[in-house]
Length: 411
Image (cartoon, rainbow, N blue to C red):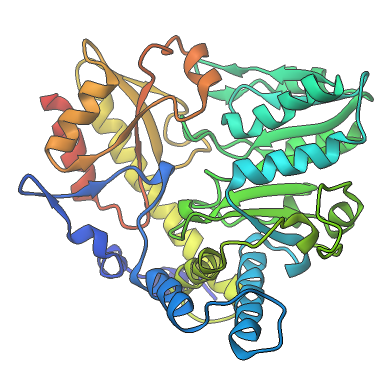
């Protein structure tokens, strides 16, 4: 299939927007432009319908001998397959949980039971605290050593020389983000995982900010574990953990004795958010529906290729508009560098609270603060107020970009 055919099969942004009831909202007479996607995207009607359908017609607990329980089992299995297709994994390697943070703490405790003094974990300063604090906890609980890898504030990119120096025969795990939720920086985690394997270490990838913008391929990345969040790619508030099957089955995971001991259920403590899991599968199917024909993985590939092209056009327009605005300071990689369509910036003489409130008054919704990427904002000297963050999603238009830039200029 040619690139031209791919382009023809990509659904237009106008068609995509018709799936999102939230886009009909108005605020103070303005249509709302949602640039808060890095903190959680809006949800298409099909996802809400799937959640409602489950709750009203199939709601039950699992593994019993009556119809709604069997239906619940089947719907969870279908969603597990959908997420496996999204990640390039096997369904037995996909576990669900409350959110990425909770899953990561759970995984860290399981791994940490086998580590102690003399063992080291490498983390990066670009990461969200959800990929730092769980490993820091092992510093207190197990006596392991944490080796932080800095980033370069001028570029917003990882210091690769420092990463290579941090890895050694004592390294037990590299915990690294695929994309910065504050700056939009995309890090070559395939390269990083190869370096870690060379040192004999396991790898954990935080793909929460990456998964909405690029099709994940855990086999190509070569990671042992990877986590993402369905609510960042048009689904409900559910966390997703990939783990190589042999890794999941070997974990000394905290669990109840009667609970399943097979992968991936051994990672899933207690009764899960069944309706959220069903909605997560529906979000994957929504994305696949934008990609024409073929297998779900093939359709997802075309969807993400089209969304990536569109996202790069949008972020270039946004960057250039803000760069030309007096008093605006931009952070992170410039367009043309590996990045997501997420931009962090400040406005001279205004706090980020002031800017976000002013934009909201015009129906432009952005987030501000540190976004739990606390080390990033500290290294940038912005700990007092953080950044304003504008993120593009599948429903973002060029007109909304222009509205945001104009509102910032008025601010």
